[in-house]
Length: 254
Image (cartoon, rainbow, N blue to C red; front, side, top):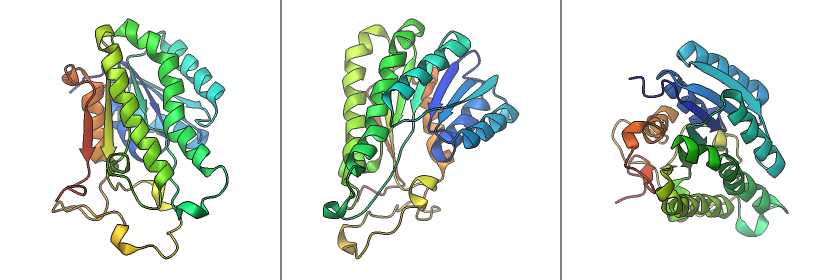
């Protein structure tokens, strides 16, 4: 399939994990990629891999998702690169866990800034262009934003906000032909949570449930999520807007 021939796609948080897998998936279908991340070296390496995978072009941009001005400037630079933008994939994220009453000062603000507020800033910056091109936005939330999660309340609140933001904008901008969809991954093999220390003395009864799907271990693969991003970002999802897709190997059901 070559669903992204002639399309320009901006992916944030694309130096690793789901963002990287999504970049390579869209690259294989001929897209022109703009890859943004705070990890400049890492995102540069992904841009090189994307070109090898078949991307029409791949450019790496550095930015700080916690800083409004940096988000806005990155978005403007992304549009200027090709003079157009067809899809924004919001994927930047940070994950912290621990006991609610022991959270360090400023942690809530940092998590919400990166996982939710940065999405707002970038969407506002690129939306006029997406209205012009009839483009779309696909954002990363989490099963934590659907059900909540013990020991990570700030993360869950931010991801719930992403879901509400997506649904609200899908309704408001449907008359303009811009689609907004959100994907809620379950437990996925990424760097996002792997380096986070374990919670001290957790209550096992409230720890997140594992997936149940035969053939999968405790974690799914980034490629499992990348396929869904490529679908929503493409013309195959022309009638999908306001959708919330949970991909978790039956973790949150039953």
